[in-house]
Structure formats: structure tokens, C-alpha cells
Image (cartoon, helix red, strand yellow):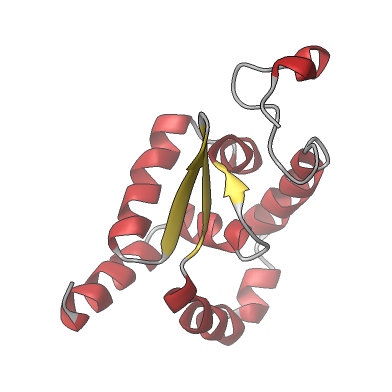
Length: 133
């Protein structure tokens, strides 16, 4: 992708509140799609649409582990995103939605098993033995 297209794709990604919420969540580390859905309280289809925009802008990277898809900030995007979030740190810190997302995400991450998502969309706490490692 050309530098011009990367810039335009990135600015498009930043122009949407849900995508900023996704990036804010991923700043803490790699997350499973279901963890993001739960934390942001969005459907999987909505999240997938936004993640596709972020992937095209080369802001996030993805990996699959069994049926789980994990997302993280792309290595090349870490520094620019850190600078952007730092530049707007005061307004981001005062954003109620981002604070609520962070609380839900922290709660959701306590369900991980050995650092990996094990709940998914169809797995319940009572059936954790059927979840992947």
C-alpha cells in the first residue's frame, strides 16, 4: 500500500468512534474478538466490519488460534498510535465510554485461562472444560 493510501486509510479509521474504542482496548495488548465484543458491547458482525477497516489501514494485526481470532496493534503502528493517544490523552481520559469499555474489558480478561480466551461466544463458565487452551 502506498504511503498516501496508508495515511488516508488511517485517518478514515480514526474518524469512527467504535474504531477508536477498539484501538484503545488493544493498546493494553492482544485481545480475542469475543473479548472485544463483550468489552465494547457490539455484535460480532459490527466488530468485524470495523476490524476490517483497521486491518486495511495496517493499524492492527490478526492471528488465529483454533477457532479464536486475536487482534493486536500492528508493530509498525505502535509508535504513531502511542503519539496520537498521548496528544489527546486528556480528552480520552475524560471519555465515559472509553472508561466503561476499560472496566468491562478488565472484568472480561479475568475469565482467561493461562492468558488465553476460553469463553468465546458459545462457551459458558460451566463448560470451560470444552474451551480450547
